[in-house]
Length: 466
Ligand code: NDP
Ligand code: HSE
Image (cartoon, rainbow, N blue to C red; front, side, top):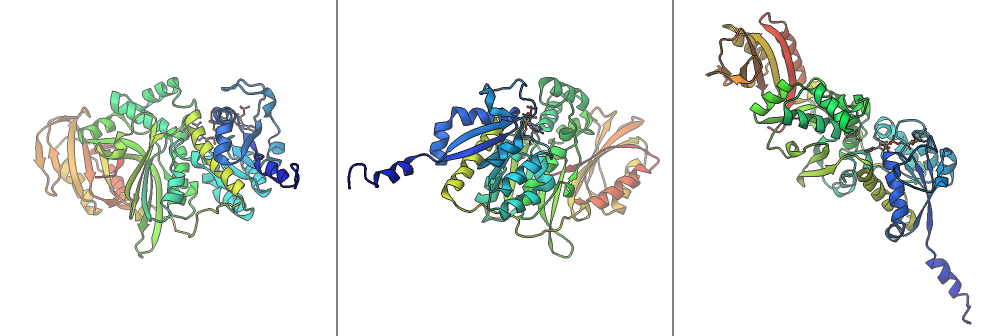
């Protein structure tokens, strides 16, 4: 062999870094940060991924719009379709259902893998995307879709795949946690805190998806699908937002050593027949102030998991924001690139069974019910008898005068509840029940509303963790 022998040539070819063509769809809050990391940390990423990640282009609507990150102008394009067609790896950060869905399906169909943070699309039509990925031996990763920077998808999908998760409780919406936390700290009403959150940029001009719980519901559907190896879509999630939570509810919670959080709750439940099902819901929830989730302040997120063998686990961190969310996206990008480089087959979805959804009739929870009543003899016993008629057991009862949290003397109730007495003509009563079904509770509340001594039912909140 000479010095320019044949042996030297493959040596050069083998050393040449492999290049993966990356298409970025969306150059907004998250997309611009992803582009920054791809460009600024190209060498480190290449070393970790085993291939150079070549940013081929960034699809946007308006090429001339000002951007958070300065990048070469020629990277921007409005031709998302063309960008996708030649990519090995597509990062979808447009958001919304269409055209994101079409672009993701096109990428998967030609064998490209996809990384996305699009919870709305995954919760609405994740099954179609996973089936397409499976059919084409491609990979679909979405760590950023739930709780921003917090590693939660991979721990559920991989680390806990040998365990049996029984329950997931999550604070997965930063906007609502910011609002509830501020109400708890300042005593202000929801509308005032929302306005402040909008002024500070925590809440969007149209806050509906956040405050009505829809954003959290999409994330709950994704978490439930992964945790229980089944398919749960947005339509399966019962959802109630925080718009009805009042300063009085917050004050009453504080008096009782509780706090109010918007929780996404997914749990395995056994129906009356003994068969297993899934309940997924989002609603404002009273939690003991000692519960780990009660310590989650401001716009932070946390997910609390109960698993048969691991016990309780909590994952905490920034649930949104350009750079934090880009961190989760880039973790998926490197992992996906490694798989492409290794030539290993795409991972399939994790749904291995079909579990039926369990409706309100199959769920038992404790409730806190606030009432405004006439403060006269016999009212308590009339209200208490309605609870008894529906088999709902009262755990505690407090009476407040004029809703100001004032508490008078405490008198025992026959069923062990504690009552306080006052001489005001109107009184606020707050009952906390033992666990009862939603159906029994709804019937109780409906009958209580019809009592002539009851002015109004001021709130009905579920209690967890007691
Ligand atoms: P932005 O609205 O800030 O950015 C969206 C980007 O997509 C923009 O660059 C926009 O272009 C582009 N785009 C939208 N529609 C089209 C279209 N039809 N054709 C071409 N380009 C389009 O969104 P975010 O960065 O905040 O969010 C992106 C995704 O990440 C969403 O799915 C979101 O749910 C998810 N996510 C976001 C988090 C966050 O904190 N922001 C947290 C976790 C997940 P142009 O700039 O020209 O308007
Ligand atoms: N709007 C969401 C929140 C951020 O407030 O947490 C993205 O999911």
